[in-house]
Length: 405
Image 1 (cartoon, helix red, strand yellow):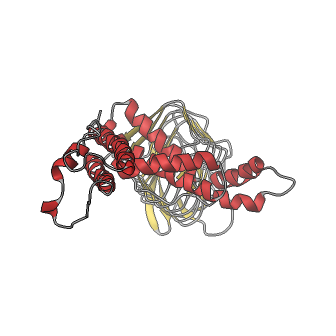
Image 2: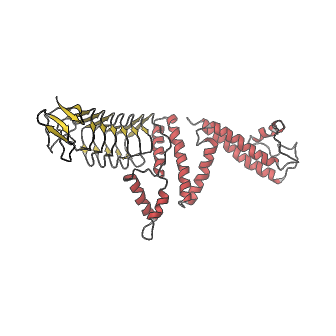
């Protein structure tokens, strides 16, 4: 294997090429196009800061190590499955562009920093593509990117939104230790393979919840609501790197289902909680903007009760507190309609023995006959409603205890 010395921004590195170096050759099998020029005296490749052409490096194996690219890097198609392109410990100050390219060989970015835009629109990777321990500083959308083999995002840090809009995951995507600091959207991906998820956790993030508000700017007499929604939606997920709130919810659902399909119920719980929490926010936004009013209102009631009763099935402590609190409320309301009841702040004077009976949803209606043989009508009404809520609280507490199944 021959090695050629390369100077990039004053830093000397090596490019490993298994065949003889060929420059300015458009019929390459495996290439990376970067604006280099050749120093005829020293037989070196030096970064060309001018706006001139680029050089093509032909060979089966090309490795850039410890390089800093101050200008855009263009990656072209290869035609050989044995081709390997590797960037190791590289910094891309500008854009990395591989739009419409087709790669049959392996492409590796290891411990790289993408400070410019990354464009893999309509790009096809037929072999391994590896972004191990790399950092993306700008919003990134893998638009109609086909990953036909293994795609590795282990220990990758996304500083801004990352979307896989209409991307194909045909075999396996590895999300191990991946950290999206902002948004992560895999809702529109075509997942015919599997997701390998481990230590993949991220906080709740701000999504594009204003999508319903922005629809008003598109709707007029000539365009329907559905068409206006499609225009705003498609622009956000394809070009603007925005994640609509329904995409956020669907992403949580996909991640939850992937983990549950592998019997990993423990790690699936946070995604289940965030899925329900996002649906609650989505329902409020739809109700506020007059979208699906009946369904939105129904969702708000159900989800709000689930939130305050056991935090969407994840906290039995909240379940216990909810049950005791709701029982105390309706027990106090029912006491207002017996005898000469007066509320007291002295805890020792409270009717604890009767409250304990009230906590049993199947208690007798005359359980307080020693206090008042003939309670007023509202005593029975509050008692009946209290039974319903106490029973609901007990059920929610048990559900939270069984969250790990």
